[in-house]
Each structure stands twice: as C-alpha cells, then as structure tokens.
Image (cartoon, rainbow, N blue to C red; front, top):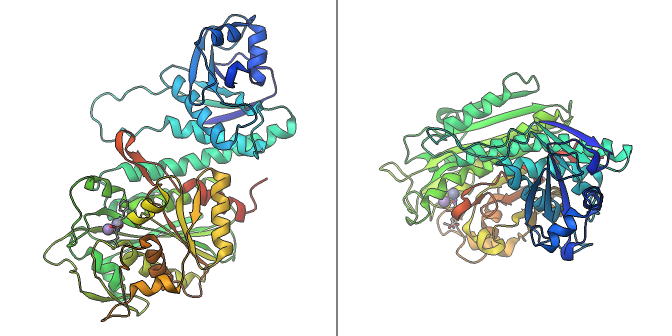
Length: 498
Ligand code: BES
Ligand code: MN
Ligand code: ZN
C-alpha cells in the first residue's frame, strides 16, 4: 500500500474517494464545511432530507457531487461534537471503508484527520487511518472455491493534515500502521485456517517462510525427540493423544546488537478438544482458534521485521494438538516439567499452561529483558472481561503497566488482573508439587499463578486473549489481537515512536 499526506482543501482534491464527517444535529466537520460551500449547500440539504446523518457508524457514499473535484464523497457520522476519540475515529474510518469497499475506488483520502480527536497526535491519527482501513478490507477466502467476491482495488491511502510537521508525523504513523496491518493479517490468516490445515508443522513452516530473505531473522523448530531430551515432560503430555507431531518453534530477530532480548511466547494449540477431559460439542469448532497466541506473536514478529526495529526479539511457540486417544494423558497423571517441578494433571483441558510453562523455562537461556506469554488460556477470562479487554497479569507491576498503556495507545486494550499467593494456593495437589487447575473461582488468575511458578526471577507477564482473539457468531473470525498492543510496546522500547 502507498501512503501520502495532503494539506490541500477537500473540495479541490481530484481524488477517487474523500472521507468527511458529520456530527449530531447536522453540524458539519472541517472538510464537510468546505465541501458544503463548494457544492452550494448540498450536504446541508442531504442532511435535512435524511440521506446523511451524524449517527456514529453511519456512512453514505455521494458520487459525482457538483462543485467538488473528487469522484466520491463518503460522509460518516461522528456523534456528539467534542467527543471524538481515537476508538471513535477508527470506527468512523472503518464505516467509511466498508461503505466504499464494493466500489472500484483505488484511493481513500481521509479528511477526518482534521477533526479534533481527543488525546491523539498526528502520528496516531495517521496510524489509525491505515490500521482501520486495513482491518476493514481484510477477507479470508483461502478455503472458498470458485470466484472470490470483489474487494475494492485500493492502492493509495491519504491523510489530510494542517501543517508540514503534522504531515511528517502522519506519514510515519501510516507507515507503522501498514507494518502492523501485515502482522495482524498474518495472525488473522493463521487463526482462521482450519485445524486440519493449520497444524503445528504448518505453523512452523509459516514461521520459517517469514524468515526467508530477512538477514536479521532466523527460525527453527525443535521436534519431539529434542523436546524430550530437554525434559519438557509437561509440554509433551499434551501431545500424547494425537498423531500430529508437536513442535517448539523458535524465531530470533537480531536488530539490537548485544541487548537482552524480549521473548514472546505464544500458545499454539492448533486444536483443543479438551483431550480425555473432552469439551462439550457446541462451538467446539472455535477451538481451532486456540493457537491465536501463537498467531499473535508470529504476527508481531512479522511487524517488527517489516519495521526493521533496532531491538532483539525472540518468539517461542509451543505448538501441539490436544486430542483424546489411547496414549493420551489421563486426569490424575503426574508429569515432570523442564523446570523440574511436578504437575498433577487433574483436567487435560487445562493444557495451555502445560505447554507454556516449558516454553517459559526454555526462554531463560536467553537471559531475557522480559518474557511475555500470550494465550487463549481460560474461558474464565472471557467471563471476567468479556471480549473487549485482554487479561494482563504479572508480578512486575511496571511491566503490566507498560502493557496496559501500550494497549490504550494501540486501541487494543488490556486490563490487569491480580496474581498472588492466596490465589496460587488453589493449585494445591496432594500428590505432586501442584495441580494444573485451581477450581472455578478466579480461573483466569489461577492459570496466571500456575505460569508464574515457572517465571520466578524473570520480568514476566501473561496476556490472556481468550476473549479478544476472535469474534463468534455471524462475524466469526480471528481479530489479529494482540498484534497492535505488542507492536506498540516494542515500537516504544525501540524508541521508534515520535
Ligand atoms: N482453550 C481453552 C480456553 C478457552 C475456552 C478459550 C473457551 C476461549 C473460549 C483452554 O485450554 C481451556 O480449556 N481452559 C479451561 C480450563 C479449565 C479446565 C480449568 C476452561 O477455561 O474451561
Ligand atoms: Mn483446553
Ligand atoms: Zn486450550
């Protein structure tokens, strides 16, 4: 995608498609006033006739407006004046994009960037423009046969600005947004692929492909024999019931000299049937999304590599399929993790933590600056936070704060949940060092406490994306989260934000 900025007036631009805004009660936004004047009051008339509205989410395409040089004007609703914030801005750009997505427009020029957007600099307005358009135009058609429905042939995205200084910042924001779109779309594709295609080996091949032709990025994958040698008895217990080989995918990006790396660990359960503790049938298909943590960290690596950030980043993906079978792990089985700690598996459906704990132990060899694991870990997190915030847990408040702040800036929000000895005590086992479940109460938190037992002495945080990683229902599909949140955190650590 190509990006540009402009300081020229909306009515004078010969663009394929210009996006302008209208507030409640027909109050015209910056560029809308200019278009209204140039078209001799056409917008005012159309508002009175009810053809355009200030309702948030509304969007109307007006083609061939007299007095205006652009081919199409998209009028989107911005709601109450003085209330527009970055999430509202993103929604408005998305609504505009959806409205023109069936046309042949090859260019979208956004003039909503001239509106006052609360707490947002030109950089974030440029970035949000690129991200919202990229997100709205994403389609997953890889598994459909025959002709694919047409999507607009978009080639250029423009952002209107007031000053040369803003132009520079908005351009940088749009280019960063483009790199984030690449990572998000990698994550969405992996999430959306069915489990009979997206196996642990497929994840490994995808990671390997990302490294091709990038001198700073190397990828390899450990097989089960190698994991056995390392003592990863916990991880391997999850793969015992399936014929599909497990992998530990290792991606290393070196852009930061001798700096300690950040390590991202992503849960890669390519299908979670629950194992012997079999899940109920309804919506079990959605457990193909149980590798969205893996998709999120691989996607973030794609973004970091595209941006050539001056940091060191390692990505670890323990990838397995969790199925029942004659060799499968049974409730009551006790396994030894790579850390030496023993675990009584009381429920084979609490498998994510069993693969993550060995990957976290493996991460110690890098003497990491921070370890952040990302996982569709618990249904309890969805009950606690719904699908809007990811759950953020850490014994290091500074790291949790950094993640939450990154989520706010990136429009990919997280909310901190507590960890502590009182919760961890729920994991007590009569037979092993501890159990893999802690009962119904605070289920997202006890899962976090379980992982915390393997992160002692590390600057570690856990992000539960069970709610945020995919949409259910009519819009069923992966969201690409938390690629924007993690990318923001790494952009910030790299000193790449203006
Ligand atoms: N992958 C699931 C978590 C999940 C469930 C994510 C529903 C999104 C929607 C995880 O492996 C799991 O099964 N967790 C169990 C843990 C329980 C057995 C302690 C859960 O949440 O029910
Ligand atoms: Mn499970
Ligand atoms: Zn799972």
